[in-house]
Image (tube, rainbow over all chains, first blue to last red; front, side, top):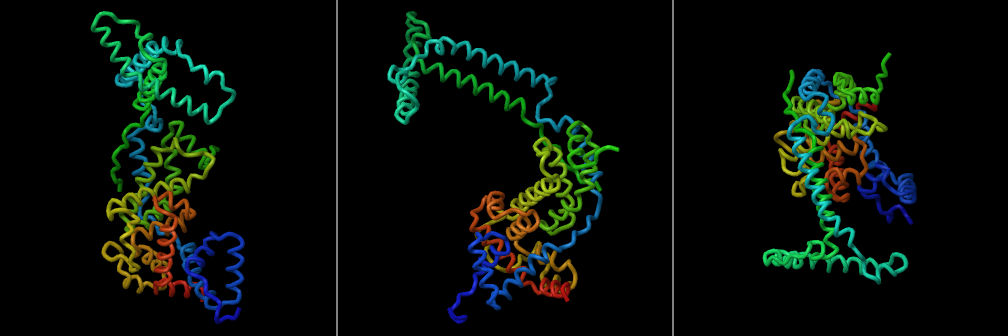
Amino acid sequence: MTEAFRPHLTDETLNEFLDQALEAPARAAVAEHLATCAACGTRLEALRAVFSGLAELPPAPLGRDLRAGVLAAVRAQGPARLRPIADPKRPAFQAIFALQLLAALALLAFAWPFAASLTLPEQLLSANGLSTGNIAASLAYAWFGLSGLWPALQQWLASVAAQSAVPLADALPPIAAGVVLAAAGLFWLMGNALLLRPGPAPRMRRQS
Amino acid sequence: MPDSSDRALVLRVRGGDSEAFGDLVQRYQTSVYNVCYRLLGETDAAEDQAQEAFIRAYQRLDTFDLERPFGPWVRRVAANLCLNRLAGAHGPVLSLDDERDEPMLGTAPDPAAAAEQAETANALEAAIAALPPHYRAVIELRHFQDLSYAEIAVELGLPVSDVKSHLFRARKLLAAHAALRQWHADKHD
């Protein structure tokens, strides 16, 4: 190929060449082109001047010492701010923790009879190993169990109203155990999120 | 003699010795200020943002990975603060409707004034400051924070193709800046 018909390198290629962003074969091809193409070499040098200018840019002098202002703000918030955990001595912490613990324990106590009676369909228990079919069957089972939860609960409430209530554990589908356990976990996590959240950032004031 | 490495200072601060943070501030305040100055182009605003960057770093010191150097981390904190400030002042930092290839006028120094300072490094500072904010952002993150295209894209929430486009245009503007060309020629004469 003669010089006249050889396409020049694009700006993007030259930039990526200097950014070390080209794969080895492309980089070698660009280097080969640059070795014989003066026009592209000139463009590369102009671009390289930007790179070296930025790299050699001397630091701008800082007009004031920032330590006093930073340390004043840091002292104002105190070392406890470094820990994201709230102060356990605060009444709010203790109240939230007590509520969280009570709610989680109550839900666990409620869920226990369901968990004890939880059984899986025979076809799932007899299956060998994990397969796509087993997973699909398990999901379908969970879905049908969940979809039957609300009607069963309504039926039980109606039986309570009619004063002919059966034990709740007998009235609800076994999948209720999973739902209640999940709710207990959710309560626990939400409580932790409240308890462990960092305190508000102090407002910065410029210190001259 | 107490260990004065960055790691030791961070551990002392985490242990409750907030005064040790002053040593870290002293060590990195100039480089942090320069990040802010390059991105904001104003000395007062850059000093305020640098101070706030250190306070923010102190608040988040528990998230700092002790196996990594402190300097790049605190400079990244400063860059993020400035990018948020630019986004607040000018809309999204990388607004796609601002694709013009002329230096932004108004808040940035006058390019003509910068050209008169052709023989000093101030010319390059002025050329950077005259760039639109989203171009300054990619220049800062690529050349001074040493991030890859992909990392810049994550940082700014942009496609890599847009990052490249902004970066290449910004460099083109800097390369075309008469003051920069003269400054660079003088340095290599």
